[in-house]
Structure formats: structure tokens, C-alpha cells
Image 1 (cartoon, helix red, strand yellow):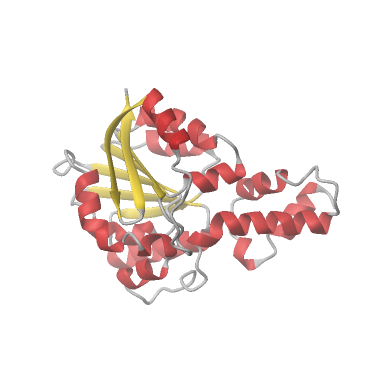
Image 2 (tube, helix red, strand yellow):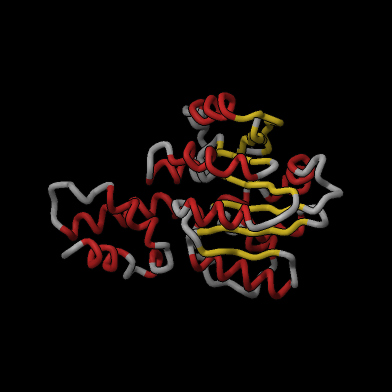
Length: 255
């Protein structure tokens, strides 16, 4: 099989059928030159994609459209642990912006768009997500509730498209990067740094978070992500640093 045939074969599985080609290509490149057959490369690529996206794509919520936002937030591994902290979290994140027009760009949103009602007034929300089923689910909710929000099906590796989306808006721009850097690094080493260098100059504030404990085993991580904090300290201005539950947040802007 040639590369395009292999990529098509990988996405024949329903769980990968709505992933952007860019994400699948990045995963396949990890195994493309390995000395093994095409079927083994397909299996290895699927395993990696599953590892990157499984925590954020619970099969229980991929097609649900008749449940309220709190029910869905509780069914999703990532947002479940944030649910009790959303009011205080957003109050802290938007401190200084509460009375201004705000635009949130939620990169790797998962289903975080269902937390929109916890955000302050005058907030426009744009969720950018690679899993097409989650994009459809959020957009169905936004339309039903008539919210000033929308979700875009796009790969975070399409950097120029992400920048263009951010640059084409006006207002106080806030970027969320909630628990996404580990997944980015699985597919491309140091991509998180590249992403931040390109987008931070165009926004007023970035909020990056990472888990301090395993979402499934509840074990504390030995790695403390000092590499990303050191990079942020050296290149940007840290505005705030705090923890809620099992999630640590860094808030920063361009110097």
C-alpha cells in the first residue's frame, strides 16, 4: 500500500473517521520507516491515536444530543474533574476582563464548550477541536441554546489556519490550552513551544493547564512539566499560577 492508502485504512475505524488528515499523518510518521508490514504500521498508528485522543473522546458522549451540559461534562474524563471549579476558575481567568468584550479560543477544546454558561457575560467562544463528532455535538448545543459560540473542526497542527482565525477577530482575546500539551508532544516533539511562539503575540492572555494526577489511576505524576514552565518564563510574562483540583494553570501573555 502507498501512504494515502494506509492513511485511508487507518481512518476506516469509526473512532478515527473524523480526525483531520494532519493528525493521522503526524501519528503515521512515527512508524512510517519502521521495518515492519503495513498492517503492523496501521495498528501502531491507531494505538498512538487512541492514546492521544482516548481520554477526551468517551464513546458515551460522542453522539448524545438530548442531555444537558452538566450531564455531558460529568461523562467526560477531562471536564468531570473541572466541573466543581468552573465558576471560580473562570472568575480568576477573566479577572480584569469582566466588563469587556471577550473572545475565547479554546484549542483542543474536547467538550469544554459545554462550560460556556459558567463564563462571564460578553464572551464569545470558539472551540477548535480535531474530533469531528465532538465538534458536531458542541455546535448542536450552541445552536439549541442560542449561545454566542461555535466549534471549528481543525487540527492544531494547521498553525497558519489557527493564526488566521485568531487574527480575524476583535476584542480581548484569550486562548485556552487545557490539558493538551502532552497530546501535542506525543505527535511532534516541541510543537507546544512552536505553537505558543506563533499565537501568544496575537492575544491578550493564554491559559495553559496540565493534569497533576492521572485521570484514571488517580496517581500523582512524577513529571511536573518544568520544561514548559521554563520556556514560558523565558519567553513570556506570567500573570498567574494556581491549582484547582487535579489541574495546574499558568496564565501568561506576551512581554
